[in-house]
Image 1 (tube, rainbow, N blue to C red):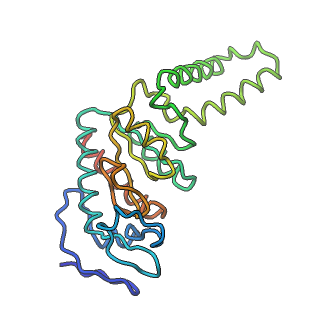
Image 2 (cartoon, rainbow, N blue to C red):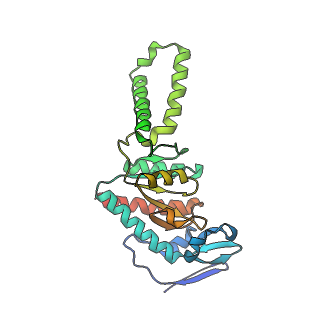
Image 3 (cartoon, rainbow, N blue to C red):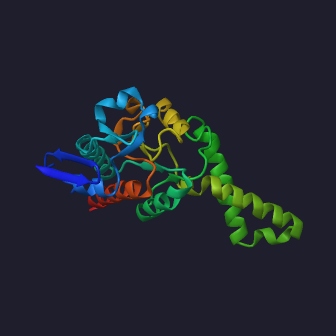
Length: 244
């Protein structure tokens, strides 16, 4: 048995057998257990809640470990089968974490506002991405030098805008097999489009979220950087093992 205690919060948990090194005390340390205020609870999440502390729901970390293990196993299966995984995290404070993970493993990602139609109107989005890449090549080859200074300024501004929108999906030639969503509510359009196109959804599910929206939920705090960083760290480890 593992006894975890801090301030006024304590619980006794069974040891967990995890091939990914998941640890209840570590998850507690990084704040995965903190949910939202009781008033914001989604009724379907009640079975994954341990209790209440200062009007805030505390997530049952045994449930977190169980769901996290399944999600990591699935991610590992995806990568080892050469299937594609997209990371979606548009919260400003999470953008660098997403980019670091995506760059490390050459994964497509979205960190700015989700563009409607990214999945459901993919062919149109793909044409815009191709236009962006073509414009970028023209700039690199100095082909744009023939334009006036005013025209070049306008083109450069357009390039900046296109880069912000499409940099993370510039090499996405087809729809991904799955997406990993850091905030299911903030990026609900990404989740909806994925569902519409039969794309699997893996995501962090806090106490205010309907877990049925996600195929592979991870019951955990989706607001704290420490929590998300810990989760993405484990995702990185799973991907690294799958690529060996």
